[in-house]
Image (tube, rainbow, N blue to C red; front, side, top):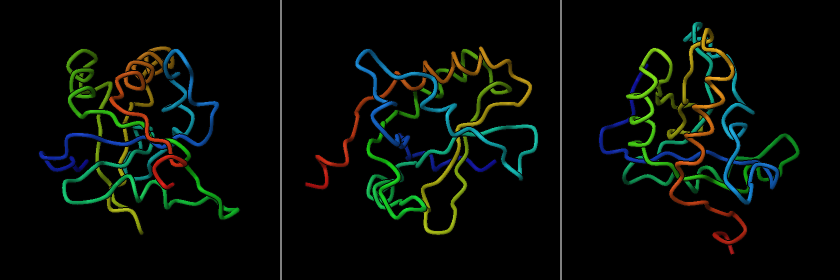
Length: 146
């Protein structure tokens, strides 16, 4: 697992629709909804994020992603400080929660929030809910691209 640069202090989680945005906070499904296997890490599952690398523009890259229909893939972006996930790793342990940066074609900011496959789903949902509600800003594409 490659870690983001130490000066990378926040990450963005893209949200597809209004269903992810709740008036009283964010559900664990913000992260568990897109969780999947990672070929290179067979014991882990991950939820995709974009690391906000200094000097880069992870938010612009998030807005530029499109689905198979050519429409914007994400309408919202949660900005979450790295220190929040580091705090949760301190509570839950690095065998239950981790993160990485794993650039893909066209996205140098891509990475994952990682959970072991062996972790009970209720614990994973608890961690994901805590992480989702640790956001510092909710970006809305329609407002920022106006």
